[in-house]
Every structure is written in C-alpha cells, then in structure tokens.
Amino acid sequence: MSLTRATPDGTVIYYYALFGLVAMMSAEFAALSVVDLQPNLSGLGARRCVGGLSKTASLAGIFVGSWLVSFASMAVAIGYVRLVVGVDFGGREGLCLLGGAASALAATGLGLFVGTLPVKGGKASKSGILTGFATTCALFAGLYGEPAMALADDVAHACPAECWFNPVKLICDMFNRLYFFEDLGPFAVRAGALVLMALLFVAAATLIFGRSRYEHL
Image (tube, rainbow, N blue to C red):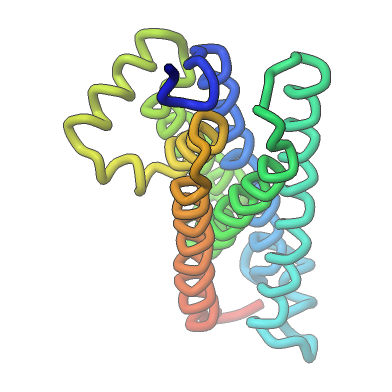
C-alpha cells in the first residue's frame, strides 16, 4: 500500500527546486526592462518619458512581454528535464507547464517590483538583488545537496509560513504535490498563491513607479 502516487525520490525533488531557481532568475527580464523605462537611468527611458504612453501602459507591456519570455524559459527547462534528463512527471506534463506559467508569473511580478525600487546602481544593483534573493531562497528549498535538503526540512517544520513566503520553496512544493499526490487541490492552492504573489508585486510596482518624479531628464 502506498500513500503517494510515486515513490519519494531525492533526485526529483532536486529538479523541482531547480525549477524554482530558474523561475526566480528569470525575474531579471522584467527588472532590467523596467530600468530601461526610467528616464534617470537610461536614454531610452528619457525618450519614453516624453512620449504619450502612460506609465501604467508601459509597465503592462513589460509585464506581458517578460512573462512570455520567462514562461518560455520554464517550458524549455521542463522539457529538458523530462526528455533529456529523463525525470518522470507522473504523466502530468501538461499540468507541469501550467505550474511553470504560474511560476513565471510570480517571477515576473518580482522582477517588476525590484526594477521599480529606488536604489542606486542601475541594472547591476537590480541584478545583484535578484540573484542574491533567488540563491538564498534556493538554499531553503533544498537545492544545494542533502545538507541543504535537511536544512529546508528543519526550517519548514519550525516555521511552516516560510514555505509560503519563499517563492523557490513554494514552486518546489507545488511540483512535489503534483507529482506525489492524486488530489490536485494542494497543487492548485500553491499555484494560486504564486498568482496572488504576482498580483501583490505588480500592485506595489505600479504604485512605486506611478509616484516616481524626476528633477530633470
């Protein structure tokens, strides 16, 4: 008698955590595009600022375009792991792509938010923030070997809320629930949490960017 659809496999969990890191690293697509939208950071941004397109419309275009690129990256990663590496998805490849779309949505929202933060350094600082955030989150998702997996389990047991606020861990758990359990409810809840996370990031980015003012161009 088995309590799960498949036998627990550390290799599978590793690749699911890797999906989370890939998704969060793709947040740079949105963040660097937002930098090019800011007139005090780029000449392109200055030209856009004097144009007729509103800030909200510009952010919306960046969000959609960056999400498509991020989702394409996730689809390539999922396809490679399934077809080349040979990791089994339990016959739920289509739902894996749906999870990849939700993951890319959260990453794009994060990138949009970081891109609008008023920090010095331009693209280098925004890229550094996202890289540090993604790799740190990946540590607590168990990506870096068995010691990291043990650490991730200990943190999850001590502070269950961390699993919901750490996007890499949330993505990893979402794919785990899809692979190991018949019930799609836990998968849907975590995919919904990623979508909600994206909406919160987008709302914050829109608020910050909409209130930005510049002394000169």
